[in-house]
Length: 247
Image (tube, rainbow, N blue to C red):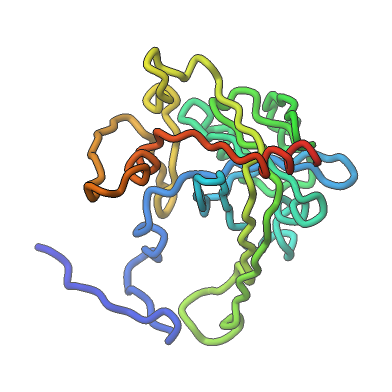
């Protein structure tokens, strides 16, 4: 027998009536932003963020969202480092690395690379190290940080509202590392071999173990638009190249 339909308004103090809040189980799967940073005083940090996504592919831009840290009662170390240094690295989180990814979710006062015995690899354009065993890493410079304040914090609404403010960190991808072993003979990224993991709701995760293809329909006179959407065009911007060389 099926359950009755549910409608509820969180900002009016209503809940779903279910044993666990289902909200994070609906926008799924979410790629994981496994972000490495370095503080001003030189301490490295590594942490996973389940609110992560690309913003644009031309030029490559990504974002991750750090909620207020419940333990330290301020923004996460990752966000603080981005504010102070304007640099971070995204590392692809894979099924083989799932335990390391989960370990680094612990908000410690130490270098998570060292604490959990995760091998570092040097970056070329930014100070934070990469995760050496990740198939793909993006070296990024902060484009902007947007504070989403919790104006309902402390009021009687569905909660508890413990995360306070959230910081959206947007980064320009300055350099991309791809391990050759994950490139197929026909030049595609072997996503099945990499097996990236993604966040679901509750304590659930998933990983990519199958793919299928569909072609986006286009208009006859769209020209290069169709090629751009399929990833067939290369990115060539002399201004962006000049910006990279000047930093």
